[in-house]
View 1 (tube, one colour):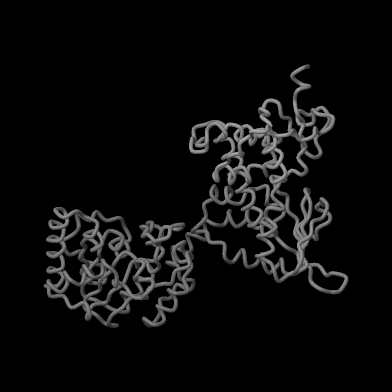
View 2 (view 1 turned 120 degrees about the vertical axis):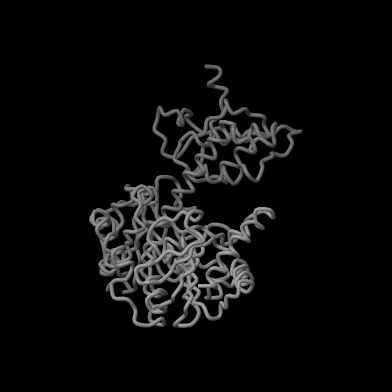
Length: 469
């Protein structure tokens, strides 16, 4: 009983009131109140609940006369500000305990093995994800205000106390329209100038749909790409609990069910709807630029067409354009292209008379990095793009095709190739063309000096064989 009476009860004004909690926590730290003496009470706590154990909040204690300033690292403040929005009723107890420990161990947040640090990080990550899902899955429906103006209303059910924290994002994103976001926790209303808060709402307060919804459903079904479908990843990014409020969600089961058949049809056509090859290289370039039949075609880069004479005796096929090629719109203009040109010149090959192209026409790269780092295309992506390469070869009619690397060889042959076993000899193709497989010049750039010298000799010999043919 004595221990219970010695506790200090502190009320948190709102579930997301991190600033108010921080002021109270700072005063408690300076007064020397240990974490086991503090009870944080939350709005709406039920009587008898652990977090409603105090009949009334206690006044803030006076700090000790010689109390030093409260120390809190930037890492702590960043994580604590997110973790405070979590629905866990014990979150403020955890935050205060870590803040108390920071006064004696300033580098505590760097210890990722510490249970308290890991717990705060876990809460912050969940909140960050919930904020992202709200930004992704809010769907506005248009209603008419009393003055006849359009007003966009959305219903959302956040898992945590993120509504006000996300308000700034929606103001910036939809600054030019009048909108309201209704949730069980409260509401936000934007009139184009002022953001106001409102009381909690129910699903019945939001409109059921609008005429634009049918257009959106048609668009969603049209862009649903079965070749990119990974059900586990999709459900992870779009959890099923959000589906009930998404107008496109009732289309998903049928789209998933038909995905395998649609994908097989796409591959059979090689990514071209009509199945008829373009009748000119210009038409081919236009069609390739519009192709969105694999993930690479949808990554925001532009297609890089083949370059060189319309009828060339030699066609050189690389893997895919790189960063510099995508920016220039021409194949083999980067470092690997320079290696190819140097060796071709030494072998007596005139690249200006050759057709230069790639097995894959868009640049696949690692996302989320400052530099666009090359990423190898998958076998499926190469096979999807093979239709375009076959169409180009049919139009150019080369006598010899030089495939640079295993991906280029697969684009020609349609199968996995062992480069070391099949390089350096001609492979006859069905149309009478002779295929020669060698390494990609980019491979030489990745080797050490000794290994590069040996591989360069083999590469030079392969190019000399192509020149002789």
